[in-house]
Length: 260
Image 1 (cartoon, rainbow, N blue to C red):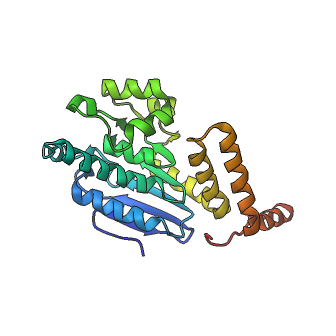
Image 2 (image 1 turned 90 degrees about the horizontal axis):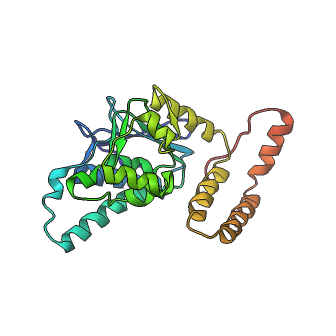
Image 3 (image 1 turned 135 degrees about the vertical axis):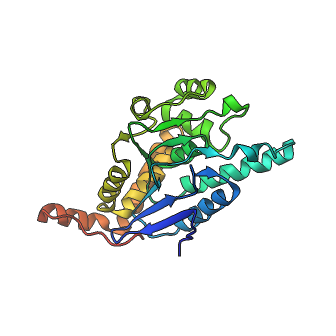
């Protein structure tokens, strides 16, 4: 059972694609309640039999980030460490979801909103979406994973430029920077189309691709190649490659079993 609240709704499709819909008006700011609701959903998605997951907002909004009034309540270093660790843990749980995650971005993806999108595997944005980590303007940095995930996605120079200038970029510039992977007038429809493509492939293979890439990013090349070989070998006893070969020679779409 996946947690459901008014703030974060979950829609499960028959094709194995799950939609996570953010709905905390007016702009999906990360209040304590909204963060807790997202964290609960992310926890339940660790064991969900999903083939792909799309995270989006409603009414043309993704998330404008943290509630700045909450920052004013943080007065000392111990409180600051608790606050930032709790914030990191929410997006870490999103990043740890075994199934591929796709952020469909309308409107704002700023601060914590962009940190959520960066914790996803794939990002699709509208051309007029606005993305950025503007925390330096308010005397802070993006402490819920933003400095590290952004640098890994766009490179250290571009990440420092975006964060130190507190710049906002639209979908076209985000695509040029490789901050998003596609732009589309209807990013939710595009994200769902990608999710359905993923859902047609072997869930076991797809999940191991995600793990292989994520684990290899933090390893030297020789160790990463060893990890790749381990994941490849792990797939053989599962046996999806037999169905893949049969489908290829019979010229039909493969029919893979549920997540195992």
